[in-house]
Length: 418
Image (cartoon, rainbow, N blue to C red; front, side, top):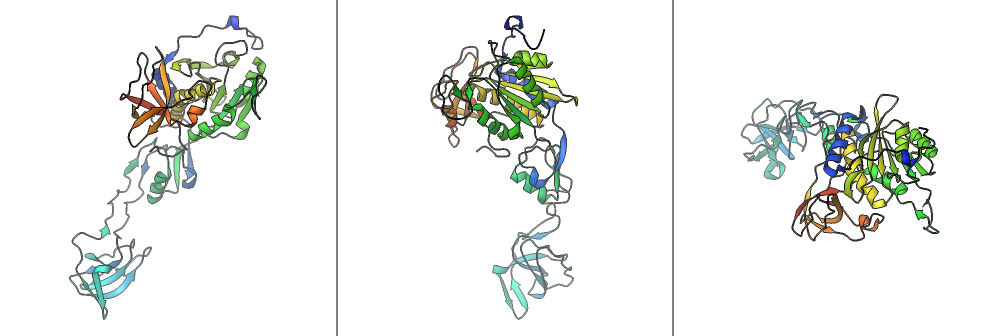
């Protein structure tokens, strides 16, 4: 069959849609199997990436006994004769004589031979002699108090955030081995789309071209302005050329629209022309049903992925949280995202034998989810005021007081949810 003229009548009918939870598990597994290569990065360049190997300590933490207060490092029972001073960053001489002391700063190395540290505010210093009663609890941090040398502090697959970066620096690391960030591209399909100005005369404004790259960046992807292309002409040759070009550099190409089998829906024959295999072809979820994920092998032998997002904006976001999020977790070597739970404040209807992803606003302190309004497939007003989607499983509906899983909308890379 010519890829230039593949007619709708010759297309193979689509298989039954995958269950929503099954689809998520399936795409995570293929992502993990194709986990991206590891690279060494300076600490300052690792925020939002993922540890490719466990984070271990290079020394004991702390590496030497460290004073936790300003005061006096003393030997013996006192009063003590002052024989010097120790500041942070210096190596002190040992205290070799009883009833001697050195002034010591917080964070300074405690000299060998010291038996206690006396707080400055609990001491007296007169005529070169220091007196006071040290507390029974040692006023210094012992080597290995936080961790021992070579101890594993965080496993591979941990997302890197500022706290992890600080811990790595404390451990003595200058670089970290992390998974290379996924490179993503976006192809916008649809001759009816406007890229500027208000909608008019049968044409609608493209909302996904500007917004999908921002969602992808929040999932840890690199998306350059040149990686966003469209609207692509509604012809099969244009679709094939655009997707082939995007796959040259991208690990993941997202497309918008064209996931059904209408007269100008060319995504399926395009995937066929490029030799793609479906990982998931439609998902039993509302909104967002006509979504897909396909896999191709690049010239370097590595897998590339195409995520077909529906053209309706909210449905496209449902596809992002349903298929793209677990795929990217796998590609980055992270664990499958665990969904938090919340209590429904109001009733949420079911969608028959489909999973219903219902937009909600969260009161995180109370653990309560409030359904939002303006939630049609083509609407983004509800999304703009929402924190995520409540999962209403097939054959059920949500009643007030029910505990349900929540699919959060993505945060900035490395940011923790509250």
